[in-house]
Length: 299
Image (cartoon, rainbow, N blue to C red):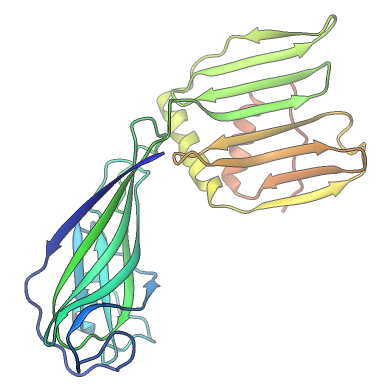
């Protein structure tokens, strides 16, 4: 599914030796260290147009200069340091990074912090938004006495999204009447209407989505992928005899439910995505299909 590459990024220039730290963690000044894990927590802060690389921040003034913002009230540089890692500027969406581990290695007074990251980039077949992105992450660690260098050890993963396929799939109706719509990654729309009698499916020719509309759809899919879904139940005839599903596929290959009406012998189960962009996707499909799903409950 994916191709893993192991890359070692630059070790930065020597850093000033820190004052005594707060102890605990991997902050031991008594013995030489081969490899010791350093605990970390993620900070919700980012740098505008951050260049690729890893940066160690050891003071409030450096924090302000780097992020153009004040440190959080609970962040004391007498006890903590901040590490920022960036993949740099990317031309599209589909990129992401996370810190998976931080280790302190080396000998007393000459320790190196090694920041292990997992960087994800989209493969050729992935559907991505055509917008500049700047994947980055910031973490807090305990102050590490005797540290003179920092390096990033990057596990780079390219997502294999497989062959281009539908990014939107819609089916709704009953055994006799219904609509089927799929929108491909290149904006091509496949549309069929099921009718009778006898039961058969007619192919409906549709215009390909414009580049602007496709871009808007991809952005809506991305937004919906980060939203919650809700499930409601009703009686066995709440939606008549019709059932169906509207689902989308993300750049990473994940399947996201936008609206699902499932009929059983006892109750109808209705699942719907709560993102405003999900309603936009549903309206887009409703403009194509002849048989529309009943609107989901209002928030």
